[in-house]
Amino acid sequence: MPEDPQGSEEGKLEMPDEGDLRAVVRTALTEVRERVRAELQAQRSNIRDDGVAGHQRHPVLLRNVIPCSPVPVWMLPEGVETDVTGSWVSHTLASLLQEVARESPYDAPQTPNEHSVVVVSALLDHTWQRLNTGHWKEVSLTWRLVFTWGSIALVGMLLQRLHCGLLHSATPAPSLLEEVGGVIRACDRGLLMGATVEHSPLHSAAATLNPFARLAAVGRHADTETDESPVIQEDSAIVSRPLAVATCPALDRFLLRYMEDGVPVKLLGVVSHWPALKRWSLFYFRKVAGARTVPVEVGARYTDSSWYQRLMTLDEYFTEYVASTTCWIKCPQLMEDIVVPDYCHLGQQPPRINAWIGPRGTVSPLHHDPDHNILVQVVGYKYIRLYGEDQSHLLYAHPDPLLSNTSQADVEGPADMWPMLQQAEYSDLILGPGEALYIPPRCWHYIRSLSTSFSVSFWWG
Image (cartoon, rainbow, N blue to C red; front, side):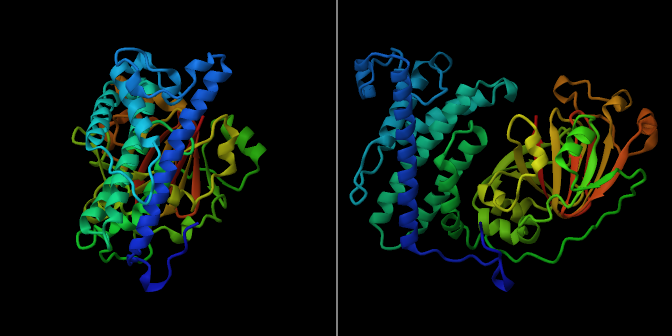
């Protein structure tokens, strides 16, 4: 677990040792190779267990496979279906993974074939187009797996090139530190857009390289002075119909009283033991994950025509955008500061977890979600209003099918603009640090940040 930042040195960037960078790169490269080898070996074992003839299981170089012929199943990661990808993608991915898995002496490594770096980049560009065509839910899992494994291949090649450069350099040149940032960006793209892969080396590579990538940012946006005074509620909000409150309800009561009946409730005492409540700040986030890439929502509301998303590092976000936009973070190091509430394990699948950072005034329009949700406030304050599913006919649901779970109404806007909304029954509350809110499926909710806000959401089916 990360150490607590202490005193006035909390936000300063510690200069890592050059020898440490060599060790970190070598370890990350080893993890990438071993994970690729393990995946291909597991595929061979699965094929063997399914009764495939022995001569079909022996290692085969892809160059001995005719390009237009089907790629042997064991040469591709689990879940990658050749009838979805086509021959070029399957041959290219299999060839790249073979190259990454190949042994190479660490004291005299070979620089990766630059043509292979170009090829893997082309593969990822092609897959990126597939991922961004049509509705996200309709994208085949195969394409997301291709993007993940393609990213792992790219990261392996970039690490190999970086390792070679470090062996021939007494101290890391600025260009090598810039390359570290490129490795992290490749890791995060794979994590954000790809499918989940067990024991992915992308997580650990990005985490361990983060301090070195931040060295390249010194003088641009790393460790600028930030006001670390306690976050207070800056905007006002009137709570007219307070939501019910429960303090650490027993699991069976939570299941029967709230989950099964679809009743929202404000939860107290559920996360009071979280290290995040003491640790999380702008300085801490920059230190732990400043070089990590995050999706940033630019615009006041996602229903606005001018709203869009873009990718940037946390350092860039805190320097240029934190006053006006929201970002969400998926970083294992920050997740070590939280504990999943027991209630989230009452579903059949592990919860999906997202951490959110946003400025005062950020608005999440009135909408509902298909899953159970526990929203935890870590830093700052939010005003939240909730409407039951039975009030849907009064809430001006959007006619666009893609936004049918979102209201057109401005909840805190002029009353005469949305007359039916004024007839709807609701509950409201202010959510402060260390407090949580259970939101049932299809329960409409509107959220406005009353200050700078760090929150964590847990969704489960």
